[in-house]
Picture (cartoon, rainbow, N blue to C red):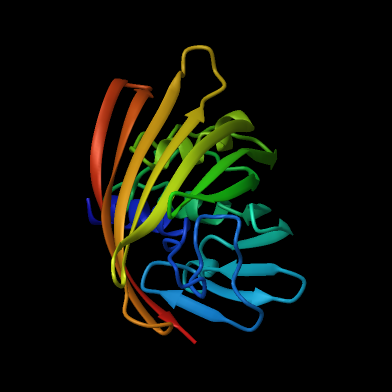
Length: 252
């Protein structure tokens, strides 16, 4: 149960921290960190603002069991809108092999055959500011390329299942909308709705409703907390689950 909760929190934390009136913190919008700006969280990856409106993110601890990297590029920024794209690479084979065991820590059957898996997530982001809020529309897909024999089951956990679905089925489209604004002084709210379109005929759709509040004490310290509700058609039938979200962020 502890491992399940950790993996869920980790996957959610990759989304980043909420946008605020203070643009220094990373966010789920089409904005990027300022060049030279760095941040890291207890669960969130290390992020750094690059030149030419770029942003790089790597989870330093989990990198050794699931190599990962995200590059975010802002292509256009005007007074009315911003346009960006985000590209994430992960190599999950080693982690899946580690989780293929009997007993404690075993998630997949010990008899599972894990191929070489290379997963890419590509997402387009379009942000506009209206009514003192930021609306961000996103659309993209997961693409997984594999090499070698493959025989392993789905990880049938809420949150995890739609994000690992492409490991078995190559392709997973997704789309969403994110609304962010100032709640009170240094408190920022964010609501995010995501939809995953699972490609098998009998798989259906997974939706997520996420709400969180971030306290941005300064440019160097922030705390966020919230919850996400996942619902849809899983291999065992229609089901839903509510999960907490929490992180402590440090910027420098």
